[in-house]
Amino acid sequence: MKRWIALLAAACMMLTACAAIPTSGDVRVSERVSRENGGVILDPKGPSPDLTPEQLVDGFLQASSAGFGDAFSTARQYLTPEAAAHWDPSAQVQIYPDSASTSLSRGADGALRVSVAVTGSVDVDGNYSTAPDDSVFSSEFTLVRDSDDQWRIAVLRDGIIMPETLFSSLFVRSRLYFLNPTNTGLVPDVRWFPRSNALMLMVQGVIDGPSRWLTVAAHSAIPPETRLEVREVVMDDGVARIEMGASLATLTNAQLQLFEEQLRNTITGSGLAQDIVLLADGAAVGSGRQLQLPAYPFPAASLVAVRDGQYTAYDDGSPRNIGFADQILNYDLDTFAVEYSDSARSLVAVNGGRNVMYHVDFETAEVRELLRAEGLVTPSLDQFGWAWSANSSSDGRLLIANTRNGTQGELYSEQIQGQHISALAVSRDGTRIALAYDEAGSESVAVFAIQRGVDGVPMALGDVFNIGQCMAGVRDLAWTGDARLVALVAQDDEAADSELYQLDLGGPVDEIPAVSNAIAVTAGRGSDSIVLMTQEGSLYRYTSGVWSRFASDISAMALPG
Image (cartoon, rainbow, N blue to C red; front, side, top):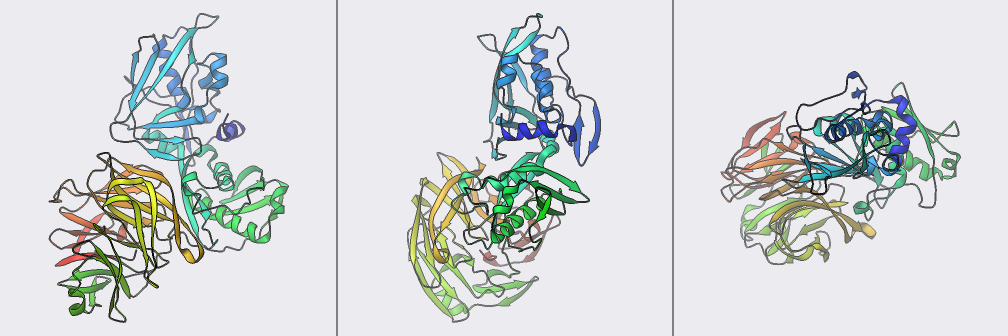
């Protein structure tokens, strides 16, 4: 049995959330008891006598989704003893829209099949995967009669299913924070844990380390050979008191301080506690000093736009010229990326022919060629001064060039070989890169971790992590947070039906209403920083859910990155 089921069994007397599931036909939900700490508490019901096979499966589905309150002991009453011993509800949670209905049918072998359209799933480690459009989850149940002539489930698939609203109530979105290679910043790894024991699972998740796709760019302060025991996490007046075994004291002061920083940011970021206290065998340990490592190093910065051929910075909506127009016009510059600074000192841009990338320094009035390649997509700049691009008809390579010394390089991924790349964006901390590409006729948005060497030099890409599937027509990408992006989608070249989507690195996809004819997006920190550019050259800023126009006659624009 997996860890979080064992933890639920230990904590079921301290339940903060559990519920039941609707199926096809009339929705039947167990009696609601109360709400506690934001979670819905429901009372799962065991099987009554003389149920039909259909009624038994229906009751099991409800009891299994309500199983977080009693470690699924009630749900196991619907199973034969052997099936109850082997069924693992933590293997996967399938999530379906509230508007969808489960259907129940019989297979040729007499087994009952439950089918439902799903939007996503969560695995045993809390990793969320978005399901492609029109995905249908099916699970078969083989029933037998027991010694009392009652139907029981003898064969079933591991895992449970539940609707989106129930999932939102029972599970907590958690950003587990890990360390970048130099221990100077935090890297988030989004997980979803049962609310009833989320704090314990967050602590254990930080100890266990990042997801596989992220391991080349992030690590935990805990050395691999060190085994830490998490005994309990108790809330005391808004403070999470984390009780651990004596092995915690074997960490060096530097390791302990970094571990505290990881835990503090993870737990306070979840909104479940305001601070933490670490204890080893009942005694408080750690300095309590906060390192305040950044997770999203994005400074206050000006939006840079090309207005009537002139590079212009917008500070609080007021334009000021920053470029040397006559020289720049000779290079036929098109889309660009701005360096990380508070004064828009330089940028990298590709030309209209999409075959040369230049570095433009506004302070020295210098334009310098960085690299040449065919079909270059709009570039992105990282905080180490590396410019990123790729051939839109990808041969598997991402092209990089250093703006400070001119060094060129390339990183290869088999995942993007032969694909059409439409957009890319490096995360603010430089540990990940998001790509929009067409794979076998279906466009996806995926993220790759970036392995770096000395002085931040990109060395390799990690495994692919898909965050948005079947999103045809992605034109542009922009980071709005340490684990969140927006993707601008237009179904055709006219861009009249442009759409904007918010993508979590491990979470559902949400649509943001967009202005018509949008062809480019940029962003800084949070959704209120999003800026759209339309085909007509107007700029719109998104503030408190409302789009407002603040500039016109624009041909290109970008915030740093």
